[in-house]
Image 1 (cartoon, rainbow, N blue to C red):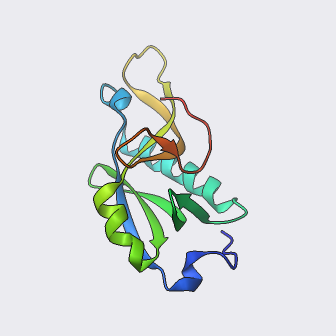
Image 2 (tube, rainbow, N blue to C red):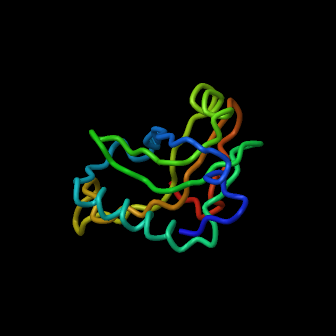
Image 3 (cartoon, helix red, strand yellow):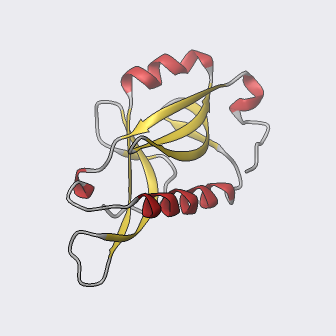
Length: 136
C-alpha cells in the first residue's frame, strides 16, 4: 500500500468504517464463512498492489485501506478528512460488485466469490469507487 503526498493520512485523517450493503443479486445464494474470508483476502491483496490508496468519493478525498467481514456484514475501512466524515456517513451508500462461481451441481452454493469493485451513491446512480470490473 503506497501513501503518496496527496494521501489524506498526511492531512489529519480519521479512520472510518462503512457498511457495504449486499447486492440484491446475492441474496439467494449460500455463501460460507470460508468463501467470504477468501473473497476479502483476495480483494485486500489487490488493494495492496495499487500504486496509491487515495481515491475520490465525489469531491472528497479518501484513502481506501481494506475490507473486513464481521457479524455477517461486509465493511470497508478508509481514512477520511474530519470535515467530510458526517457527509459521507449521512449521505452516501456503499455496495460492491463482482463475480460468483457456483459449486458443481448446485444452483445456490457459492464456491468462490470475487469482489470486483466498491460502488457508492449519493441519492443518484451508483458509481465505481475503484474503477474496476462490474458483474453482479
